[in-house]
Image 1 (cartoon, rainbow, N blue to C red):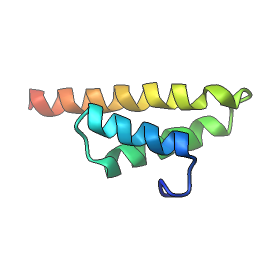
Image 2: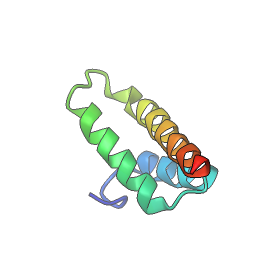
Image 3: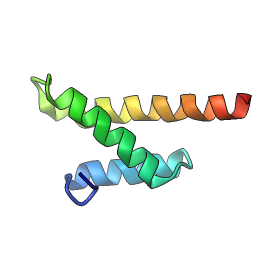
Image 4: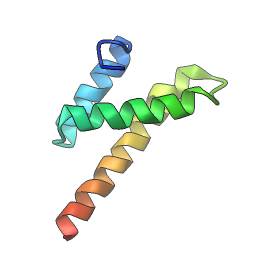
Length: 71
C-alpha cells in the first residue's frame, strides 16, 4: 500500500506529520500504514481511526528522535 492507495485524509496527515517532525515521508508512511492496518481490524467506529493513528505515529516518531538524540 502506498499513499496513493489510501484516502486523501490519510495522505495529508502523513505529509503533515513528516513536515512537523522533520522525518522522511517514507518512514512516516510506513509507520502510519502499519498502525492503520493493525487498528482497522479491530475498529468498530472507524471515523476515529485517523486521529488515533496520527497520535500513535507521532508518539513513535518522537520516541525514535529522542533515542537518536540520546545516542
